Amino acid sequence: MFKRETFLSLLTLLVVAALIALSLPVAAGSGFLSTATPPPTPTNNGGNAQWTILSSSFESNFPKGFTFRLEATSTGGKIVSAAVLWRHSPVSSRTRRLAQIDESGTKMVAVWEKAPSDAVPQWVSVEYWWLLQDEAGNIYETPRQYAEYADNTRKWNRMESDDIIVFWQEGVPDEIGPLIIAAMERQRPLYEKSWARPLGYKPRAIIYADFATWAEWSPGRGTVGGGLVVVGQTSQSWGATAQVYDPLIQPVEEVANDTVLHEIAHLYQYANGGTSGLRWFIEGNATFFELTSGPRIEQRVRRWAREGRLPSLQGEGPGGREAYDIGYMFWVWLTETYGIEAHRRVWELIWSGRTQRAALEEVSNMSFVEMETAFRAWLGAINPEAPTPLPTLPLFLPPTPTYEPTPRRAP
Ligand SMILES: [Zn+2]
Image (cartoon, rainbow, N blue to C red; front, side, top):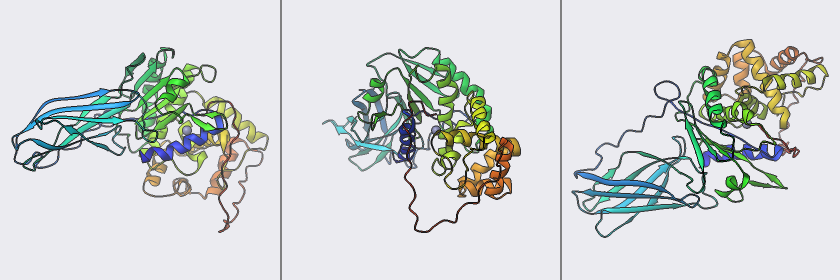
């Protein structure tokens, strides 16, 4: 789950800033959003033997883990070695467990039990397959199978479209399912135009009705320290975003129209070059995919510009909430000025190894200072001149980012 960690730490910081985190997901195939093609079976699979699968099953024991069972035979003799492999999305690393084999050499059981450092939320996808070896040394890889880490201990609802699979716990308003599906469908053309590389899987949104349920799958994970609490997380290795619904923080419409779309955009960022780097660039970009937050943000940022207190994007640029808002407006400016193709092009350049700033300079054909001046003038800033960046001091230690624990939800 290493890939998750980058994003996790990013999210964790957000949450420290704001008490909350959020989102994710997706697919390729017929059209942009379908499911991924399974990888080909290895050549010479099975060796010289005939292999027969008599039964294969997956059992969720949520919150403890899950169990795989297989009954199979080989004409090459008893099965002497068996391992099951699985992953939660095509971009996550595989996990492997050796199975116990019974005396007959045909029945196998493999168990995964969660540990504090190795846990996943309910309802993630489980793609799994077995590797078997018989007495004669033949090796066989079974076809891929798909399951879900179902939470059978409480009531959940499930809805699926071409774009997303939504799970919501009993207690979350039932409109959440149709609302998320409608929002994803409405935004599908924008995702398609904006990203060169699709996700390669169908993302999942898992919406919790209460904090206890969210915290159950990984005790301790929900607490950052200082009384701050993480109430959401998005992971490319799960291919999912998990969020606690709290009507006092965010109405259900906003979760569907803004939060989930924002988090799905982070998944696209992963697939198109990554989520590290400048916070305003990454968070503003994810915010660009929200459906309804734009007008409020625009009003705020244009007011800062008019009042002469718009922070500069030079250096690290703004942090906290301002990174989201000003970064969002920057992406609006970029795509209004150069077309939505500019979005796609910038991320293609990042994919090919450019820094975020170099990609922007190449697409706009301006230096970053010139670009920011144009952006600030467009916003109506009374002081549009972007400050000339200070030369980098070689021995200067990067500052540790700190955030105020404002009691509101981070997008
Ligand atoms: Zn974000």
